[in-house]
Length: 94
Image (cartoon, rainbow, N blue to C red; front, side, top):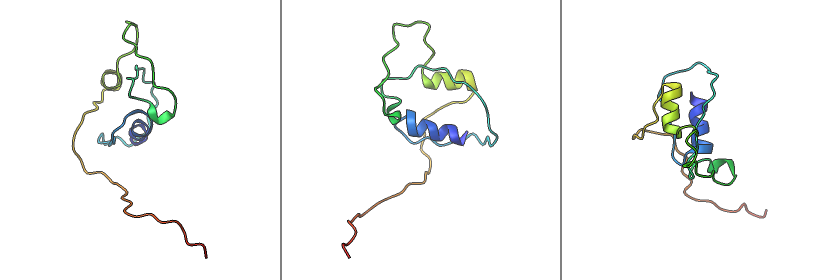
């Protein structure tokens, strides 16, 4: 689940994603969902087209995770590791 959370943070969502499931095993699953226009920017491609007209389209990410995996993505405040860079300089020309 840690790798899944990392993938969500890196490629799909624009917010930090913390794995608070406590699940340590590896799982093999297929998640079918329809990305929102603001999602998938981390993959470098164009934003996905809206699927509002397609009634057969899979649900949004949050609904799909809950329905298909039995997990819930929720916004919360939690401690997270961060890297702070307070100064940067070019190397000297020695």
